[in-house]
Amino acid sequence: MKKNLLLLFLLLLFGGAVFAGLGGYLHSQQKLIELSKQNNRDKAVALFDNLIMTRGWNNKLDGVYMRQQDGVEANPHLKNGQITTDQGDKLVKVIPAWMSRERMRELGAGKPGYRYNITSLMPLSPENKPDAFEIEALQFFREHKNQPYYFRFAKNLKSLDFMGALQVTEECLQCHGQQGYRIGDNHGGIRITVPTDLLHAQIQQIERQTRITIISVTAIAVLIYAALYGLINALCKRQRAIQQLNESLNVKVAERTRSLEQTQKKLSDELQFQQMRAELYNLLIGSDYSVDKLKSRILSNAKQLTASPWALAGEVDPDNADLRCLFEIDSALIDNLVLAPDEDGSYAALWGHPLHTGEPFKVNRPVSEWLAGDRINERLKLQRVLSVPVMFNDALVGQLAVANKQSDYDEHDQQLLERLAKFYALSMHFLRTEADLKLTREKEKRYLREVKRLSITDPLTSLYNRRHFRELFNKRLNLAKRLKLFFGLLILDIDFFKPYNDRYGHLAGDQALVTTAKVISRQMRRSTEQAFRVGGEEFCCLVLAETSEDIVTLAESIRRAVKDEQIEHRDNPPQKVLTISVGLNIVSDYEDASYDKIYKAADDALYEAKSQGRDQVCVT
Ligand SMILES: Nc1nc2c(ncn2[C@@H]2O[C@H](COP(=O)(O)OP(=O)(O)OP(=O)(O)O)[C@@H](O)[C@H]2O)c(=O)[nH]1
Image (cartoon, rainbow, N blue to C red):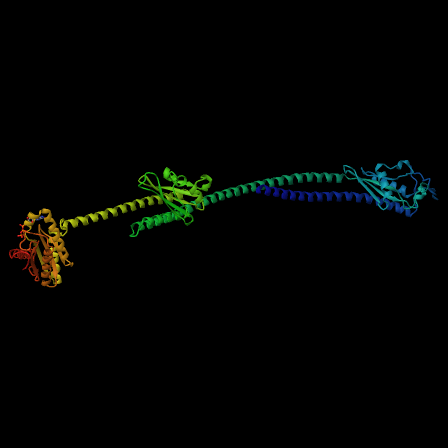
């Protein structure tokens, strides 16, 4: 379009210039022709003036006489028209008109094409009758008294017809007085025809030159225009090619920029994703992690990654075969939203889609347009939704959704959300496994504690057993040594227990053992005092004390307390109640103290107590 306008403009400009040039040239040629015409006119006027001068001279002399020649008659209208000189020569009077005619004849003689005539509208002689041109000129003079000349070029410009006006003078009246002529009138004229062959030839040459010039100039103009056209076309082509190149370059640059921007966005999203994942890992391996914290972080990450104001995470209840969801919605705007399932217990439509199909769900138009009547979604007024299933080991464990991004959700958003969903699944799995593990560990601990307890406890009396006694013995001994305390070992044995069993039965015997153990335990009030059941009806106590008296006192109080229980024992004379004998060894010098030595000493003391009548404490 631009090119065409330019070419049109150039065509007009160039055409205008060519026409202006040709016009100037034609004008100058015309001027030349005019000058040439004027030259011919001047020539005719000069001839006319010559004749007028001759007439004037004759007129001034009032006619001149010349020798009469053959064929020359005297003018009958003149007075003294013919005279004879003294020498007998015959003279005739020559008047201006006659003289003019003679002069014209002389001027025209031998000059082909020249023609002279003196005439008037009312000639006296019929020979002088005017032709058409002459009539035309004479009528012109009559109408324009101040115009002395009349010209007309022949059509082929080969001759110029000229007529000069002749004013009536007094002399004219001599002949034309009777015709009503008045002095000063233009009644006649001299007609001169001048050949203008030169003018004709000149004009023909000018026309030829003009034709050649026009053709040449036009041809040159056409050639120049064609060259310009070609040049402009080529330039336009080049420009168009450059423009196309530029456009394609711009497109490529735009494409590259777009792809760079996309890559940059992907990289920045990837970086963001990695940071989020690192934070999530930290959260997972941190000491204060919780499912709530993790979900809240996942939701805020989903919003951040997809530039969405809303995020939603749903979990499939692992204990329920139906795909019931436990939803969490992160938005103050929808706090009051009731997320109850439909009557059939399912979350249909929008929320249910990924759960039912296991496929991602992406809609970039208002929910009301495609899901009219859906109670939940209508309340949410969702404009755009992207929801992906949360899968673990090919099993659907929940869904992660975002909504109402400013622009459309695309594949990139979906990929990011799917990756986050994977992490979500992994985290949830980890948390569940972790919780299970914690529970198992606690159970195990409890079990081990129980086993340990059982391993060191006597099942009948709940006192520590012999094994624990052995384990603790040296520890307590070393502690006493370190704290510089007295170490006491008490061996307590029920008196005549066999007869007790025999009389009251084994169960009663067991009960008596339990009661005795309780009594002993009650006496063990400090952390430095422990009681053990080390055999059938045999107990031990390990006691650490500031003084040996404290230990003896404790042993006595135990013995007394058992007796005070007043458990009937008929075969234990003379008390008739259940009693115990106590063998006690107190260690204060730890130089060569050992279990065997100490135990033997206490056992010896017990033997002594038994030997001395039972129900007593013996100390070694
Ligand atoms: N009921 C019951 N009896 C037990 C248990 N362990 C040991 N005995 C009994 O305790 C009795 C111990 O008797 P002996 O060692 O002969 O001594 P004693 O009859 O107590 O006589 P002294 O010790 O000399 O006073 C045995 O008859 C055992 O059967 C038990 O767990 N339950």
